[in-house]
Image (cartoon, rainbow, N blue to C red; front, top):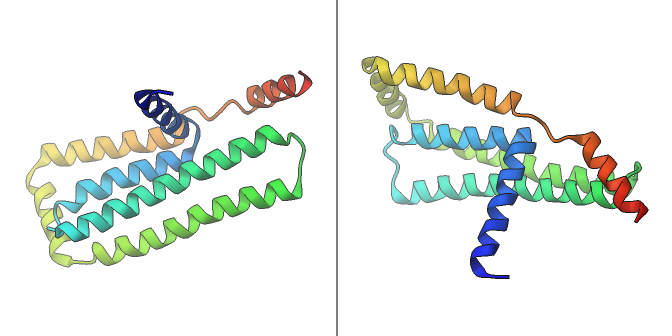
Amino acid sequence: MSFLKGFQYAFCGIIHCVKNERNMRFHTVAALYVLIFARFFHFTRAEYVLLLLTIGGVLAAEAINTSIEELCDKVCLKKDEHIRRAKDAAAGSVLILAFFAAIIGIVMFSDAAGWLNLFEFYGTHPVNLTALIVSAAAAVLFIVFVPKKQQHNIQTKSKDDHKE
């Protein structure tokens, strides 16, 4: 496998997660708004590094959770207690990381001056405020209404593969 082909496969995996997992879409949108709002808080380089590592950790954990769920669904079509526990543990790892990411966010975004900067900027730039509101509406639509994975097709394909 070529080096560049590996990147192609990785990007396909990321796209699959975004297209098929609502939580990945939520985390992606949340990361985008965190980065947009961060500029009003005048973080140091170290604080930006912490912010980026936290975002990357949550997104990576969600991708790993998706891969575990996909693999479990492929290897076992019937209800299985071990599969359920594996999937629950993977989802729990995302929840743990997201919980601590939220605490980091609360601590980092607790500066009142940053919120005043943000409100002042959007209050004095109605075009930017309108763009923010429109983007928020689009983000909600993106999170909620992007088609979910075709569960029926996945199960049918898995059954067909199992027969071979």
